[in-house]
Amino acid sequence: MKKSKKWVILLVLSVVLMAIIAIFFLQTSSNKNHQEVIIKNNWNSDSLNNYFNQNFNVEMPLGLSFWAEKAGYKITPCKFFLPPNSTPFKIIRSLRENRNQTVNLVIIPGIWAESLCERVSSKLILNYGELHRELISPQLLLNYGFSDTTWPALFVPNTYNISVGVSVEGFFDRMKAEQELFWDSIRTSKLKSQDLTLIQAVTIASLVQKESNKKAEYIQIAGVYMNRFRKGMKLQADPTIVFAKGKAERVRGREDLFINSPYNTYIHKGLPPGPICIPSVEAIDAVLNYTDHDYLYFCAKSDFSGYHIFESDYNKHKKNASAFHRALNKEEKRRK
Image (cartoon, rainbow, N blue to C red):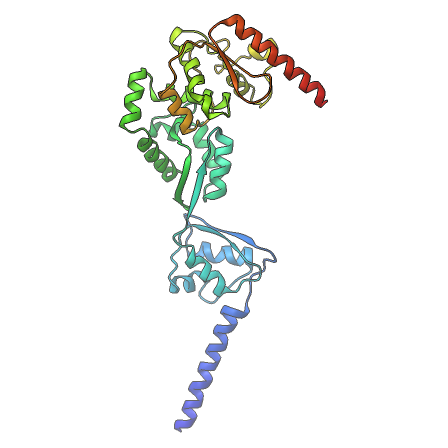
């Protein structure tokens, strides 16, 4: 009798073991290539089970979420690539390994709303459309002291380690905290000494950013714009025309220079309504520490080196500009 019970127990254990093997190791996902898995913020057990059933044809007794929780995974947002034909064991292990997932988000200088949203939504589990709506609508930004024209001043280019499942509000909270750390007592005291507001400084920095890719020139370019700004001159910054046109192309003739836009610094005195990009730290610091000189003009060199010639005399500036435009026209003809 004892032997028969022992065999029954062994048989039951064998059946259970075979069932476990079949459920966890013999069943495979339906994806034939590496496929991205995205677990979102507001999901529950049913959401997780339905997601893997519908997208990967994985179905388990009591649901995948039940077994994942037993393995130490509580539903938290994450994203990863699942290898083809993965077993439920592999899926559960991947969920567990990514349950506290963070990524390095790089915010680069010189970008505008669309590029920022593409960069953020590609790294975090944030919807591009939702994030973009918040940047062009002042409703949420007002909570952080910004608007739909001044929002670039909220962002400081850097690499940020951030939770992949952060909400839109959480993302803005983090950016605001980092912005406040950046504008420390040293930088804020320089703002006061320059008699500038934070928005004014970042707006001028955005012009500097777009004028040159030579960081060594930033301080001088900032000085030119500060001189014009102090004298009440029109800034006449070509990057504001490019921004108003919405096209990264050469500024041509009166049609461009008189484009109807509040960002057109050829027809409006003072600063544009806000920054025309997210400026770099170097551009911001160039404004705060700009070179004290008497230059009012600058023009790109005709050798296309990327450097500029600075002048205080308008007639000399006109000659430099004519030389550059002749060289530019010649180069455009050569390329046709």
